[in-house]
Length: 164
Image 1 (cartoon, helix red, strand yellow):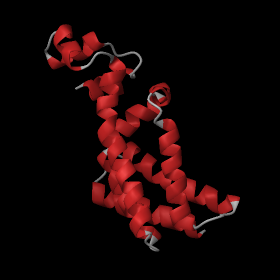
Image 2 (tube, rainbow, N blue to C red):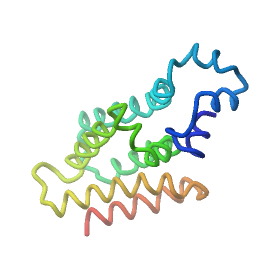
Image 3 (cartoon, helix red, strand yellow):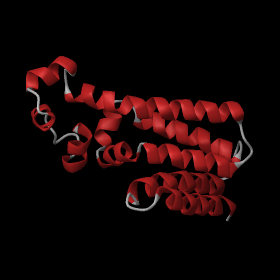
Image 4 (spheres, rainbow, N blue to C red):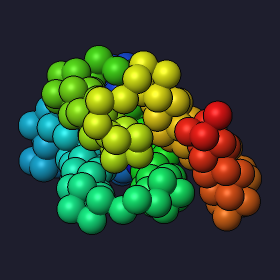
């Protein structure tokens, strides 16, 4: 419910009163669980943060030489969290307040290194960034497309981007 309000209005414009009203609880009841909007946002972002952190660590531990497999699993993760990613992208201020923007940048750089190797040229870095960013964007933007069809098309485009 809170995520829906954040998507509709933005995180900064959504009050705890609006969230309480949407949930059908009193504002004090909501304050019992969350002292602030930032604490509520943090609780929503924690599963995404944990999943991405675990994902990057697992990818580094296995260090698969198959870029397609990494891109497929990255798409799956982005698709799983597409609603929250959409909200976060629309209100980057909150990501900075929770120190998440720097973490996402770090994760993406680590994944790019896995995709294209150490000491990549600028061209290869850009291709890696476009491949990963494009997958995230597709997961968010094409919400009415069959997930399997979207995954196949998005991953194929990302692989082509890396190879071009």
